[in-house]
Image 1 (cartoon, rainbow over the protein chains, first blue to last red):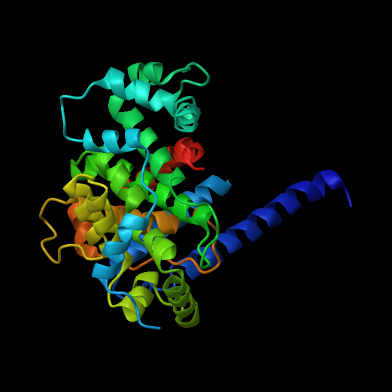
Image 2 (cartoon, chains in turn green, blue; image 1 turned 120 degrees about the horizontal axis):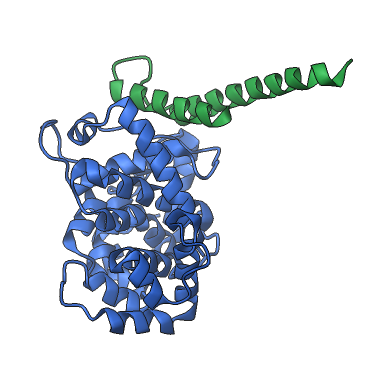
Amino acid sequence: MNTEDSAPLRDEAELNAARDALRQRLAHLFRKCDLQGGDSVAQMLFKAVLGYRLEALR
Amino acid sequence: MKPPSLERIIGDLRTLPSLPTVVMELLQTMGDENVSIDRLARGIGNDQALAARTLRVANSPFYGMQGNIDTIAEAITVLGFVNVRSLVTAAGIAAAWPASEAAGLKPGDFWRHSLSAASCAATLAPHAKLPADRLFLAGLLHDIGRLVLVATHPAVFAEILRRRKQEDCLPIDAERAVLGFGHARIGGALCRHWRIPESIADAVERHHRVNPGAPRAPADMADVVHVADVLAHALDPTDDPDAMVPPPDAAAWQRLGLDEKKLRTVLEQAERHFNGFANILP
């Protein structure tokens, strides 16, 4: 396999793995917050932290 | 095991390590305009470990003064007395406790979370129109009651940790189940024992019990410390596998008027502040 072609693919795969790990960690951290129901503040915080961390991954 | 009463723990505060004299003096200058800055600068300079940690942070990229500040007097001139007072008190308080892992508490994780909450509280200050230096100290001390428990009743603290882990509940709920009260009340008592300004003691004491309702009222210091604590847990500075974000109090958040966009900015500023201050820890 041409390494020049595979490098970006590997980077993309690593990025996806990092995004998945981040979502899992945040879901674990927020396990005591009602993200599915009516807790709009917890939902806002979750979205803000996820967005902030995802931006840092780019 | 019969759990100790709050009165008993308050009585035990006398057995705890005392703060360096210069830190006690600095704490007492909060709200006092007639302070001799020269005398305090000499006092800080005489405590070499304290001065060294303070200068390490004063020279961090956060203040943009890398390597240019050599003395406490220079730090006060460049950064201002209020900023230096925050640095010195934070360094002095964090260094006053033994760094050993007693009763399952990891001091490194404890202080990283505390400093993260302090950075979040200071960053939120303009949203609440409250003084950043007091909020920084209140954030730093918000969980200090847990250290008091470790130092005075390690077996009780170990039981609280065991229960928290077994039930995967919030630490404050495990404390209330075992003791009948939580670390926040102990922390408030320690702040008063140290003669820290009452507004800070009150915020430490009420950060798990903010005023209910009144979402349009002005935010108070307990609101800010509560929100800062939640943010610090969400920023996850410790990678603790048992970590959890406590459910935020909606009224406290509404009093601070934070929407998602403002929150993103606060998170970014608070993390930068935290990284700048991290060298203050032992």
